[in-house]
Length: 460
Image (cartoon, rainbow, N blue to C red):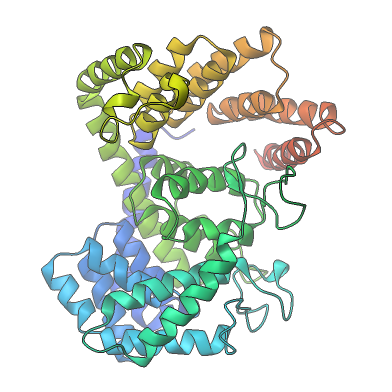
């Protein structure tokens, strides 16, 4: 088995080759996939090269295969220096033209319920149906509507007017999606109001999480959870690449970066699109993105180690304030907790949203309740301490906790530690035990067990 050092060297060599190929030969080979090259360069921290790729494609009249042009331009402008921003802003007329072409192709009637023109053009051909609205496409177009507005100058252009109309209709449709708090995903679009509705774990159903109009905390928690679900497979190369980059790049969420790092552990491996496999340009872009994510993850880990003492002190102070009933008063201008209840949990949720998972775990530990221990284990998973999370989950089960979520997360904690055979057994046992009482949890466990068992069967 290769050592961590050998794997790191392999990644760097592979990334260097991919960078050179993508920069020199990729322009002619990328074709309609050129936005993926831009996203890869952004992941690698090179907004200047991303701007160059975009400029070459738009000035050369190369249409993008997916509605990604304006939101990619917005990401480049946000991430780049003054030169990169100026380069992108000079492309504003071409960006507006590209946006109008996207609407004409995917929502010619301007209904706000767009559809992929064909299965071959869609992100997930197996989910495509004619004359049916596509959630993944709606989320991408909504981001395009909001991004093209950033490149408006002076009087509203025809693209700006179209964007405003389309944005209203698209946001109305996506806003009707219900949120499943237990699974941190949107619910399926069925069932009566007030009923428990199963989470929508289809690839297209997760794309509304990319809408930048959603609260950042919801996008981050949902995006990270969606990546965990995506590990069960069923995603195309473009579908996964697109979701991964758009979930991470806007906010740089550490949790999403860690989820990406786990999926990118073997650079260059993307799900295959049919028998012909993944196009070389898309493969090269993926390798470059893998390297960028690995570098960001390593840098974040180093910074986290340097700040351990400082964060520990801040977390302890937050916990003391929470237990004293003062944390809520110190938040948002002194707003008191409703009825004086759940103050520690409010403090912990805020710490989690701010990225201080160590602080949140400390607050949850002080609650002394099964719910607090369950949430504390979740924070440990966020921090990469799967062994610590496993101990807490096992303790809850030993104490008589019956929730299938505890058993699901215990299996996930084992999986994160590389004990795939044990994780597969735990998933399979849960699928059998919960088939009648918790069918949704049973289906999720069964899919995870199937994937792991297939993986173990292919292992040398």
